Length: 86
Image 1: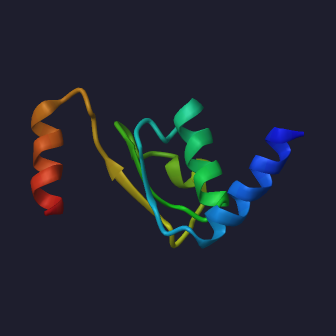
Image 2 (image 1 turned 180 degrees about the vertical axis):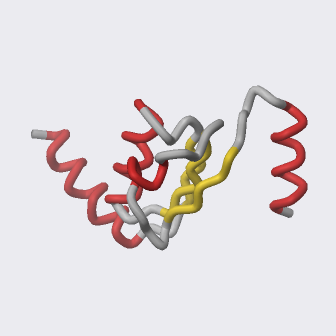
């Protein structure tokens, strides 16, 4: 019962929320599931993956979604994207 109440509260909170989620590996598996749930709850999502092919099919099209090709194991690529975003 406690979890249900908390879930209902979180649902109301999320609808009003303007936070941003940065999700890696969002083109499949757990990353895709987390990204979909965050989008469904009204969050803005930056979804990253090594390969962007098929990400729109997996996550759909949303004004709250930004997809970025990024391999987080490649330090040079991470630094480049960070500099580009500032």
